[in-house]
Image (cartoon, rainbow, N blue to C red):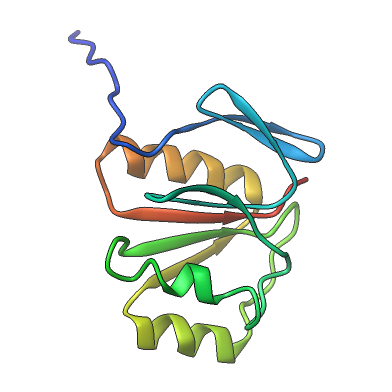
Length: 120
C-alpha cells in the first residue's frame, strides 16, 4: 500500500471542533466562522442576507460553500439560495461535523471551497 502525505493549498484545514469553536491550522477560533482562501473570519449565524456579502464576494475564488448549521440542519431560505445561484456559487447544507470533514477532503483535493460553520 502506498501512503501519500496530504498537502493543503494556502487554506488551513480544520483540526477539530468543540463547544464554542474550531481548531484551524493549529489555532483555536471561538464562535461561528467563514473559512475561505482569504482566511478565517467570524460570521453571524444563522446565515442571513445581511451576513452574506462577504461569502458572495468569494465567487471568483470558490465553486462551493459548505454551510455547517450546527447539530441540526434546515433548508436554506429561498432568497439566500437565489443569491448563491446568481453569484455562481454552489451551496451545500449539512450539520457542522460533516461540513468540517467535507471541507478537509475538498481542500486535500485542491478544490475551490469555502465553509460557513456554526459553532457547536
